[in-house]
Amino acid sequence: MLVSGRKGVLVLCTSFVILSLLTVPSNGSSNSTEDLNQSRNKTGHPLQLTPKAAFQLKLHALFHWSSFGFLMPVGILLVRMSSKSKSGRCVRVLFYCHVISQIAAVLLATSGAALSLMHFENSFSNTHQRVGLALYVFMCLQPIIGFFRPERGAKVRSLWFFVHWLLGIAVCATGIANVYTGLRTYHERTTKSVRVWTGLLTVEISFLAFFYLLIDRWSYMIKQGHLPVEQLRPNDNHRTYPTTLRKELAMVQE
Image 1: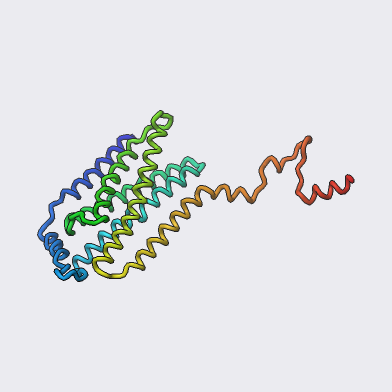
Image 2: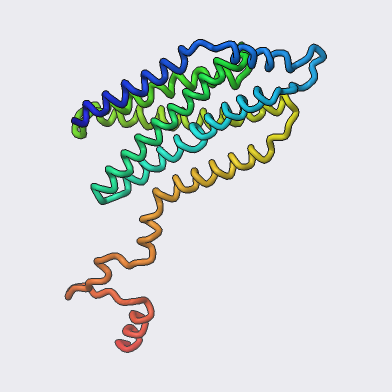
């Protein structure tokens, strides 16, 4: 039942990706591309975007920010939390939330890529476009690897986990970096300030990174406020006392 469910979701996501990328641009999209191309005049002045082109560019940025800058890191945090949970039900809930968040991230990234192919100039002459193309290929491999994970106890499970974890971290980190390069490219072409958006993205990523590190040390910090069980249960051969009490007993014995 679970295997058939995985295959169904995989087929659905694959169909959406193919349909999004193979959609033939309409006349309206061709006009949008011309608007972007003609916005830079021959004197090298900054781009003067039409309202329609500006909206499409902002929508493209929103899709990729939401995908690489939010949903993918949140999915990684959910798996991290599930590995620290001792409740079977909590582990299952966190795992399925991870799957849902990653599927949503792939769909948003696909929508952003389709929007770029249909409405923008794609000469792949800058770092943002070239990294985005490579990033999308590896991003599509990640859910396929995830859906075909081996059962626990299988010999290849450890190798699968390492590849899935490493590829996920690499795609997420590269995607975040590409969002930064996209903001920089937008600033270079339009001379519009992106400091606020860059600052917001930095604050968000810093918080998620801090939370990622905190999950690993949270249980350890909680334990610091409690004595180990063996120190709370003295036996006949060895009794443990607080430091001040040990000093008082030593003075009495002298």
